[in-house]
Amino acid sequence: MRILIAEDDPLLADGLTRSLKMSDYAVNCVNDGVAADLALSAESYDLVILDLGLPRMDGFEVLRRLRRRASNIPVLVLTARESLDERVKGLDLGADDYMTKPFELLELEARVRALIRRGQTGGTALLTHGNLKLDTVGRRLSLNDQTLELSARELGVLEVFMMRSGKVVSKEQLAEKIYSWDEDVGANAIEVCIHRLRKKIECSGVTIRTIRGLGYLLEKSVT
Image (cartoon, rainbow, N blue to C red; front, top):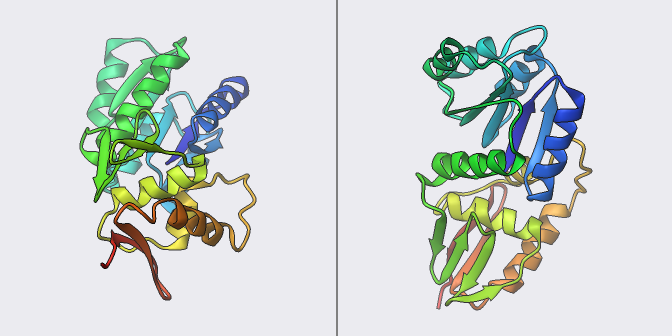
């Protein structure tokens, strides 16, 4: 899952980025409102962590423009502004949650998980496809209640497939979801990940079919 952090405090931005990457999220970071608006206009994200006091364009305007484009990306406002009027304004403009600084990192991470889960699955933490079950909170995949060991990258790819069950997913869409801007994505990285994932789930009754020229489709195996 891919997160955009819009925060002009470099220490806070770096800490959030490191923490969320350790939780297997792909994270991009910008330090002003104009850059945030451009990123949200051009790319796909599963969550935005948005500071209100951004230079060049404040967070309220970034949020206003995002919702004006009819985007439903979950937005977690993170700000030092504590007044009730500021909170109400942010929520009225379309923020999904609101945290004031200073904050506890564990609480922020819990809210991030909840917002992404709500945005992608309607609130449920469990995704199922055939005999596969993916716990999106515990980051655990099971087959007939037996845990399957996947790498963080493989788990991220499978999560995208299960959230888009029945739909073709392109290589570009997969790369957007599981890689950050600063990661070097080799030409065959997605293919290698898909190959390894196929081998690990081959006994599950589910397969990943290549749709030539379009991408991949998660579907039940043909018997």
